[in-house]
Length: 170
Image (cartoon, rainbow, N blue to C red; front, side, top):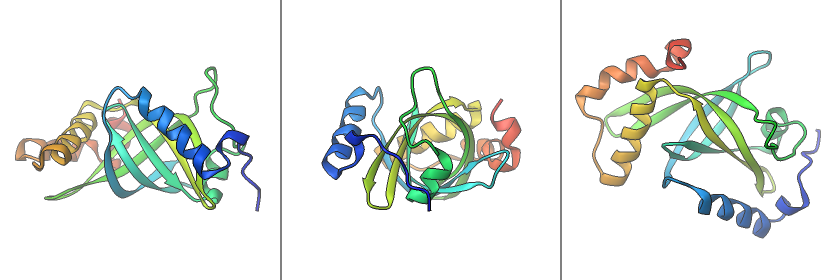
């Protein structure tokens, strides 16, 4: 198996934690924990399964195995300011009233090693349909305030799911 080349800074648990803490301090919005699966869709290759760790109005953090990380970022290097890798992602938001699929495009902002076989990727949202953005924001509000999805947003779920991926991204 190909080894994931990681910068020296991100090779230990304490350095990895420091890196994610540094990104946390730069956040404009709080993140809410989300324990669900996601899929990164790659046009010329197979899709990659990831675990969604947390979500905010402007981005998402995912975690995956080292093998998946190598497929997603073969160089193992941090994205540079002039290099912003874009991915298409689908996630299922676990509302209390049911699961709602959402699709969007996101830009990779950072990666670091969390554990022996766990790599963290941070993404900022790039192209998110208004319906998908409303569902993400409503999910965050529901998690913070304890509410659930009102009936008026149920129609948005139909517009934001992966079955309408192309329309959801426009």
